Amino acid sequence: MNKFILKNHIIAGGLTHLNDKNIELREKQINDGLFIHTCNDYDNSLEVIKEASLKTKNKVKIISKVYYNYPNIYDRRFRSLLSQIHEQRSRLGFNPLKWDLQLCCYCTINQLVSRNAQNFFKLIKKEFGINKIYLEIYPVYNYSENKIQILNHFYEGEIMFGLIGYQNFRNRIFNDKQLIKYAQNSTQTIFIGILGKGKQNKLFPKNMDKDFIKKNIIYFLNNIKNNKLTKGITNFSSIEQYENFYDLFTNLQAEANIIFKDNESYSKIKDKIFYFQRYDQYGGCYSLKDYLLKPKLILSKIKNIIMGLFKARSFSNNYFG
Image 1 (spheres, rainbow, N blue to C red):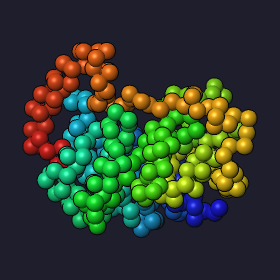
Image 2 (cartoon, rainbow, N blue to C red):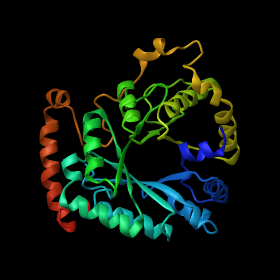
Image 3 (cartoon, rainbow, N blue to C red):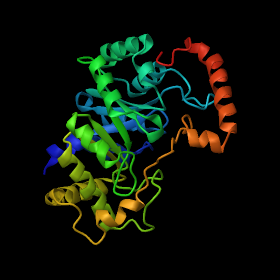
Image 4 (tube, helix red, strand yellow):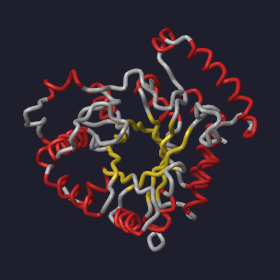
């Protein structure tokens, strides 16, 4: 294990405040070859990247978050994908060496192969060099592996589609069967929150001790072993924390060839894993059971669709832009 595997499997997030300490850390991560995770709504995340890259623009690699038909029509996220990308480009001041997208909120496969979508993907590849799209997934989205394969076949040679979602030792979007299929079909996957420390996690210990972090890293390394196309996003708040993670990540490489040799084996935790079964953090997609339990959701959904169509006239009801 060395920095080659670190830069190919770790994506650095966080660093939303513009200060010298964050700029220094971001510059180090850029020089180490890591992808950087960012978004228009992450405070000054884009400005930190801009300042950190003054001497290294030809090295910057980012994966940026954009929102498709955001469920809250009063939020600034409710706008076309293209306008969100243009804002990111404007705030950065340059096109990154590599630029991937994380597409959030439920977007059906039919919408992704529509004429508007085809024009959008051609445009962003030509103008920004973007040719990889990671669909943020929740079980209620029903992105089956077959559908992803159809999507990749449809855009073969133009755009690659992968999947991104919360995944660590205790909290998982993907189940074991799905991960096996992704590996067999060479589907690229990104795990969010690989250390299990984010607020998104539903199951985590009160004390984030080193043993818990170790279990999460070993779980992630085992997934890399099974699918070389696996990457993970995590945040670092200081250079010291970043370097400590590198040392631990490196030292645990041998343990990636085993399945948790500790007191909390997989058989003991398998019934305690949170799988986000009926969850969509954006509140745009619900399961049939949710609608039956809360009929008011149906009226809310209808209202949002109607109001959204009126407001989206500002960009010709083309959410791709």
